[in-house]
Image (cartoon, rainbow, N blue to C red; front, side, top):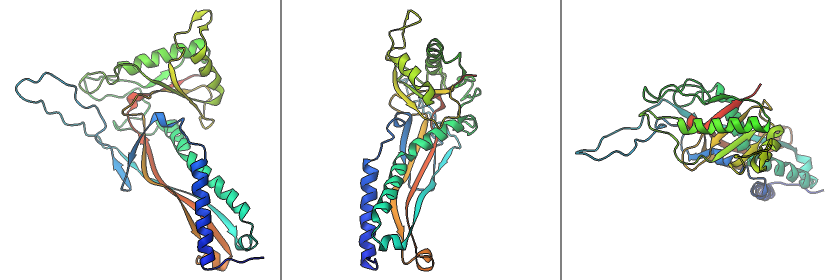
Length: 304
C-alpha cells in the first residue's frame, strides 16, 4: 500500500487535472446547438444588452447624415456558477485506486463539455415565460418594437406532425420570419432563410424524411434539402412541439455569454473534509450566462 502527502499530492492533482483536460477535449462537442447560438465574452457578473434592436437601414445621403441611435432596452444576462464535484475517500488514493477516480473525472469532463446543450434547451423551453429585450416573453404573440413594426408573433399553432403538416407549418414559419418588421417598418430578415429545427427525438426521423424525400403524398416535396440543421433533445417537454430558427450568420435567437471556461479544482489534505473525515474533493467550476437574443430569429410551433 502506498500513501500520498505533500509534493505527491501536488503531483497527483496535476495528473488528474491533465486527465480532465484530455477527457474534456476528447468528449462530444455540442456542435448541434451552436448554429442557434451567438457567443459573447463577459468580464463581469452580468452583461447588458440594451443595444439589441435593429441598426438603421441605409438611406440616400441628402445634406446631412440622419443620426439614429440604437434602441435602448433594459435587458441583462447574468452569469451563473455551475459545479460538479466528486468525493474520494483518502484510502482509495492511498491504495492506488486511481483508475476509478479517473473514470469519474472523465465523466465529469464529458458532462461539462455538453453542458451548453442542456442550458440551450432549458433556455428555449422557458421562452414562453422568460422575458427578452422588449419586455415580452421570448415566444409571444405581442411583440411590438414601434407603431411602424406593429404587433408581431413568434408563436405558431401547428397543423399536425404528419409530413404534409410539418411542411405546411415550416412554409408558414419561414414566411413569418421574412415578414417581421423592425422599429422603422423595414424587414428584419431578408434573403434566404437558413432553417434550423430543434425537436424531440420522436420527431427526428420525420424531419429527416421531410428533408430527403422527393415526394410527399405523390406530390413533389419542395422542402427537400431546405433544412440546414436538425437538432433533437429528449429534454424537450412536449414530443410534438418544435422550434424553427433562422441560423444564418449574424444575430441569433440565443446568447451564450462566456465568463469562465470549465476548470478543474481540488481540495485534499488541507481541507476540513480531508483532515476530519479523510475525504478529498475533486470538481469542476464553470461560469456562463444564457439568455435571449432576437425573438425575430426563432418561432415555436405547438401541436396538440
